[in-house]
Image: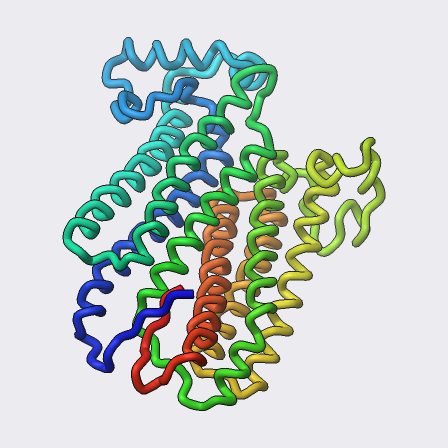
Length: 372
């Protein structure tokens, strides 16, 4: 593991180099959060298949004339979603779903430009340390992969389906959150941090490292399951809480064969497992919060633990309200947005403990920030 140190001067040379890079990464993370929300709106408004071609460059320009709009509508009329669900859709109705998908794709392109141009600028200007350069290149590569997966997802709904594959949608959503967590982690590593002066606080922080990683992985798993729910419209199937179909553990969870398909294709099972994972994740986070608050941990870790448990409580509440509202648009989007905040606090927890772990090998008098 590599480490890098600050002097105690918060305006030291290293901080002056890192600060603009850090703020840039924060901005990218915010754009990804917006992308997740807009993607959720695209899904909930059934807009994702309105653009039937992938034009990475030319697609930036939307239809500008009536003839161009009619051409786009004619392309949409060729796919099963129009023929089986939206047959007879007017041009104005088509424009509504088109603008959602176009905005989603435009935001994706904007993120790519907002990442690449400053990356080159900071690289040439000397703001990037040797350990940081390959990590940012990986981030840019992941963004390219995400764009390809986005089209791979859309393509699944253009032939023999009236919707995109729930598997591909879940992968697309999860990778967006992976990129968010990855870039946020790097940004937080670049932030100046006062390490614990007391040995017992450091040891208490480090003892939570495995649990912090477990929580972060559970959050990713829950996001993936949420993608499966969205892909199957499973949230629309059972709109009561805490019971489903009149029972806490409903019948019919394993009616499909082979049995493992139920976890990805049975709408009852898919919604049920998303609920159960939410309860389990909340319990684990609450348990970890109690441990952190009771132990001699650092103030930073305690503060983050409180934010994390608060975020997961709000997320569960939004999930319940979304179900009870029959997946009302704004509640569902709030539920999706807060999921990213939960992930952010989980990532911050891992980062804080990672810094303390590395800091145990360094003198706190000479180290204020640790970089993996």
